[in-house]
Amino acid sequence: MVYLTRRMTFSAAHRLWSSFLSEEENYEVYAKCANPHGHGHNYILEVTVQGMPDERTGMVMNLTDMKKVINEQVVDWVDHKHLNYDVPWLEGVIPTAEMLAIKFWERLERGLPSGMLYEVKLHETENNLATYRGEA
Image 1: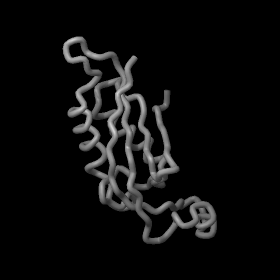
Image 2: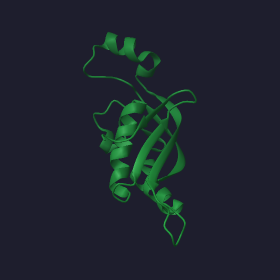
Image 3: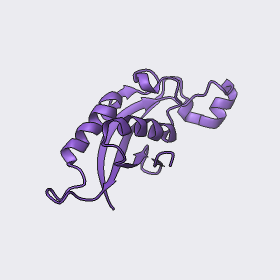
Image 4: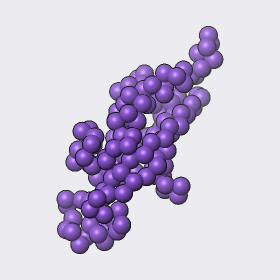
């Protein structure tokens, strides 16, 4: 099995806040990330597909096609947006890196050939990242 990864970047703002917590608990749990006006990150999104290279092309997947799917399903929706307010398919989601990785997976799975998506990795900062490989 060969794993092929495409790396993309985007910038977005978000606010971490849970309706299941009191105001005091939200500030305790999320600290500065609970800022009422949000805060931003320069995210790095890594999408990995799996498969055997095609004998005719030598590719698991054409990277141009992969880039197009990632842009159409995720990046075009989230780049330079406020994730709490501007992205309909994130409505009601606490936009932590963990939850974003799951939601990005769901979107990418729709756009990529069945069974090819292996991993979604989202770097929120230089030191923090979340990885999701689906429910399996």
